[in-house]
Image (cartoon, rainbow, N blue to C red; front, side, top):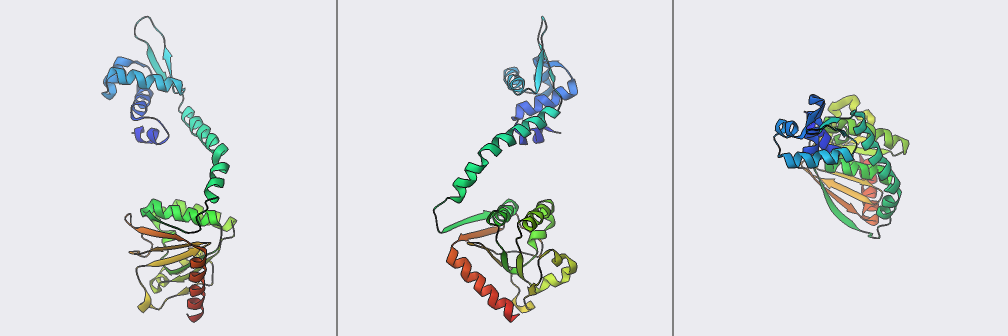
Length: 244
């Protein structure tokens, strides 16, 4: 039941299975453990040894076969925090290396829901206003709601404003549009498409096959980085905005 979660926080499959089994068994020897989770005794012993090193299991010595017992699950939380602390120590240097990239121009692709989140993170990292044409409220999609709620909080802290031209169909969503900064405008219905163009900082992001508030797992997001191109898109946005 918890094995997959244990793996996500850094345990191997066998380690996760053994720790979960010991939570049920309270105390058990290698023979009972390997039988319980159907793995070879040697593999069980190796995984238990690693769990002991991580402080998640402790041995109970006896004349016969040693037994093993799990520690309080709070230890798992400690391990996560320790990893975060180690990562926090190197994050400033990693961020510096990332921001010191010399490429004036870049082109790459994000895909699906995780790709969409990545480019939302790019918006926060760049920290400049966002301009979009053909908006479909994807930022507020139910598929990423917890993530987008936090995104808008961070954007507000960074004073990032969203300047939008939505598809006509978005009008039907009523008050939902109010999470974006007014004024915003709507394209005439005959100019609605399945595409979106967004620019922020030196970045231009485009994607097609977009539907109102739906992020397709197969959605392809094209990201271009070029200062002059981004400036051009913002000028075109201003022209369209004034004409609507």
